[in-house]
Image (cartoon, rainbow, N blue to C red; front, side, top):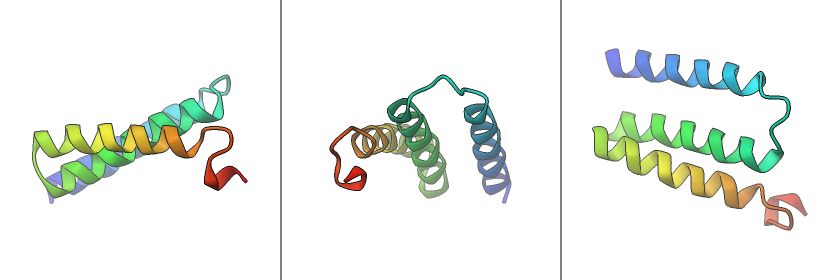
Length: 74
């Protein structure tokens, strides 16, 4: 239960922090947002290793999906 509350708090703080970065481009926001979501999911699934892997995978996925010409941008 503690982990879920902590994860939700980290996610909320990260989203608020991203909202203040108006000068960031779309790809940077996608990368950071993906890392946050991936880290939270990794933390919910496993321990520290899963959190790190989830953050890395989320950052990569967020970066690739927000590149110009990506499938979602067409």
